[in-house]
Image 1 (tube, rainbow, N blue to C red):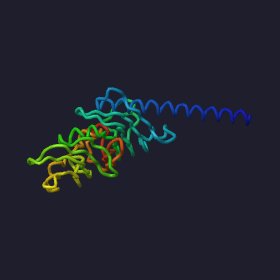
Image 2: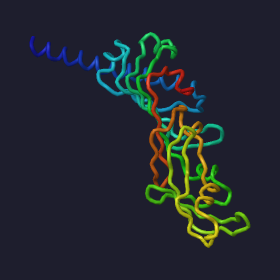
Image 3: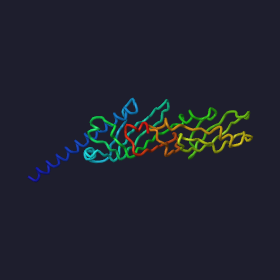
Length: 233
């Protein structure tokens, strides 16, 4: 009898695990569908609901962490790579998830990240700034143009900074034969901003920027927001 009970118990546990994994797949699919609808995506994103057991989270309507991988993200003809969302403290009543109702799904904290390729940075740079790439924690580029009747040709090193408007790129040095032009004047000419509104799948203010060989890794965080409002945050 004891062996029979053990077998039954194991089968029950296995059944709960199967039901748990089936439930999490259904929920991930529903969230992917809602996110794709909110952001008008051509393909559904990859969604991972963390935590075990899932059924306990589903019944309680609160999830510890949900990761949404969007991949390439395009907004107003600007494409960034490796776009993703990390949602923590998600409050999603089971009935709302099942019925596809996102109006009451709240998120305690949402962090978006993406890689901005240098081709995008180039779009916002002055016309005579070329070949933008990484130089440690700064950017480097070639300058070739004319300013105030003086030929400007050489190397530019610029710092980056998060601002309310986006990523500010500010020259720190320009090594060229243009010694007659003050650095402050060159900074004014070659400073530019990459607007943040097109860089991430939510319009929150940038909280972090990292220079990498592939581009600028950017992140933004917003607290206490509804899922349906993430695209308007």
